[in-house]
Image (cartoon, rainbow, N blue to C red; front, side, top):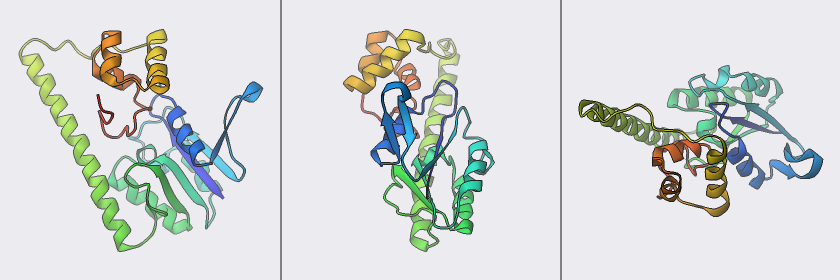
Length: 220
């Protein structure tokens, strides 16, 4: 049995990017007409955690409890991107241990760990590569957070900081997202067109960026 798990962190984020990745993998089917939308392919169980922060460990999320009830030895648990399931090394260890205890295969469809047939495989090579890749990802996030804090502190010292930049809403938000997905517009071009910062554009496109776990991953 194929089991698919998806998660978004806030109610304003969209599952669309994840669904496209899962559709390309043959795990979801897109239909049109009255029943327009994305539906699990034959033999696939889909579980989604909407508006669930990654601060909640994967094993404690509502939808994951349904995964646990449905999973059997030999099943495959698939996620579009690892950070949708786990955000840090401890969480990855816990999920891998959970999969190993139940004989469940763990697969990621995109990102640096997507080449593994089974991320839950209990061997030294898999352990090493997961440690290295996730440690690098965490380091990048920590550096970005540190630079952000330093930048805000410098701006406050000079009297330039006025809180968070404006965010896009309504028709502007829809236009940015559709232009990005349909025309491939860059973040810089969208920021100029709408008179906002690149950070505001990245916020609007948070779930659509190629690797949302690493800020500014799309060339500008």
